[in-house]
Amino acid sequence: MVNVVVLFTNQVPSITKPLACEDIVQIRNLERDQIRLLCGILSGHYLFRKHLFTMGLSDSTLCPRCEADEDTAFHAVCNCPALASRRYTTFGFHVLSAEEAKELKIEDILLLATTLKF
Image 1: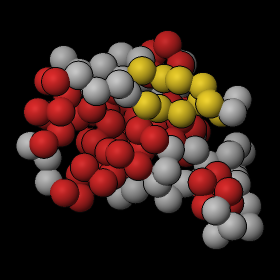
Image 2: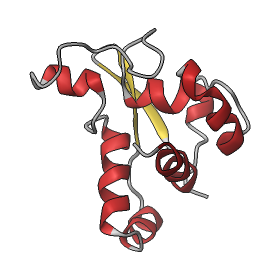
Image 3: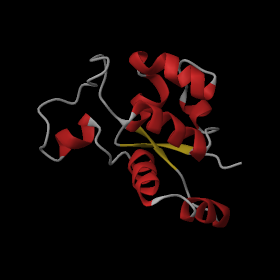
Image 4: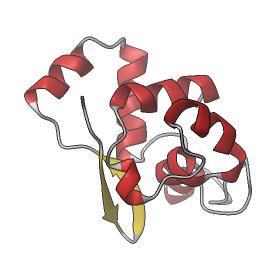
């Protein structure tokens, strides 16, 4: 089982994961697009509005799905209200805390991301 560690950088929770040898083997077996998606989600440097705003590529940091909070990897994976039913189907929870997010497996994050077409 591969767990994900949630760290807090610049007061914004982001999903990151220190890589162990078994993680590298698992990731190496993924397709290139899956690796790109996974790295973007784990680092927070994917097409989330908070990141795009920081790069000057978006006028807003608000989540396009719920418009209630900043669009970050943590928000999308753990607590966006618009994604609650999909999150429940994938993880068994409607909302995840930072502590619960530490228990997420890489394959579950990828499953959520691909079903949502991140």
